[in-house]
Image: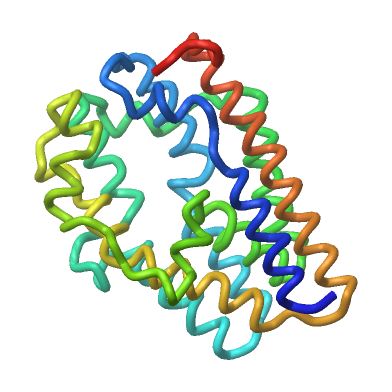
Length: 247
């Protein structure tokens, strides 16, 4: 399979990483209790351990340029020193404190069955899969979004708004009064996001090998999407959201 065809197939999967319930979670009517369900699941499923997932991939000894990209990502996730902020899991908990949630709330969050299935898949692919499968799932799928097609297109100018303006317009600030000082996670993501998106696609597409590897990478992303959609459906259901209603 030509690299261009595989890349388009992977981008087509990312085009579908867009869940109907986001309009509720980012709207002004979502309650604190509903946000608690959403954020405790997100933290336990992947936020807390994202640098651990990346470390597993690094430990599979991919090519040098891939190790460098992974090491840079891990360094930022664990220290925040590239964005001059702090460790990303800690910044997440700081943002949660701005919502009134104690860090202890996230220590032993109980996962919904679909959340657990998705988390078990992330463990499986990073522990047992090839480094290409792990990198595709973690760096492209988990860290990426429906916006990836534009994020990695060099012909599309960076039109992101000023970081502080973006934070003032963030739903947690606008609708829930989270203090701007608690939003360093958004600052960190805004500073490094586009570079990480390009690095993620570069490390995978720049090291595609045999057709069998291509098939495994595509299958890994397809499985990730299927489990992620089920996971997000379950969270939405736990929050009482109705797909037919407007946010």
